[in-house]
Image (cartoon, rainbow, N blue to C red; front, side, top):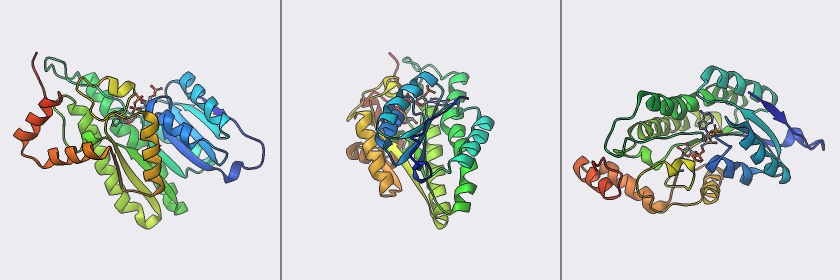
Length: 270
Ligand SMILES: NC(=O)c1ccc[n+]([C@@H]2O[C@H](COP(=O)([O-])OP(=O)(O)OC[C@H]3O[C@@H](n4cnc5c(N)ncnc54)[C@H](OP(=O)(O)O)[C@@H]3O)[C@@H](O)[C@H]2O)c1
């Protein structure tokens, strides 16, 4: 774990909004960091790759933000909990966006996922999110204030045959976020589940299938921020794909699986 702190030294430190973003070294997380960067924010950026975090931090600092970079593997759940507690002691978190995530798929000829891949996905996308939030929930309850964004996926609505563990992990955190929203509303803590469709990134490059209506990371970040500002329960986009995934979830399984095969998300044998 590496801490890096920058300050403007202008006395505004204690009035800044403290925003923690996991998975901020690339993709959607990096775009969120850049869009949140201004003189009113302190960004706490978490990911494993310190060099990439530093690069994002530099551009955020240029926009006036204070930045703390934390090199951390979110699958290291004990370290995650103690680190986030330490951060919160120093900089009470106003908003956490649990965005770090990873994926894989079955083989092109329908080969099974490896156990290592399954564990990496569940450890990152599920336990990593739970560990990031666990120390903060009671602290936010005590403060009677806070906001949580959980980045799930449209793949949470209906398991896609080529990405079984990924969809399972995203369905789990979607459900967790929905539960948190109901639980924590009385504590004045806002919780949003974020379900993007295809966003151009290293992660989406790993999907074998078609990527209809793919958007840029900048566009995704601006839609997420707009939704969080409105405290939207479920920030899903783009709308047509969102509607399509919702339909897949209510259609009979045979029809849904046939449809997914047409978009190359069904299990095929070449
Ligand atoms: N792109 C899409 O089409 C799409 C669609 C739906 C949902 N999503 C979700 O959006 C989120 C962001 O995805 P993205 O497309 O921006 O992917 P990305 O470009 O691959 O970025 C993933 C980020 O997560 C971090 N990360 C991965 N494993 C980590 C770990 N064990 N510990 C700490 N950080 C870790 C990576 O940083 P390091 O490698 O430096 O650790 C990186 O900053 C993910 O949760 C993803 O499932 C993406």
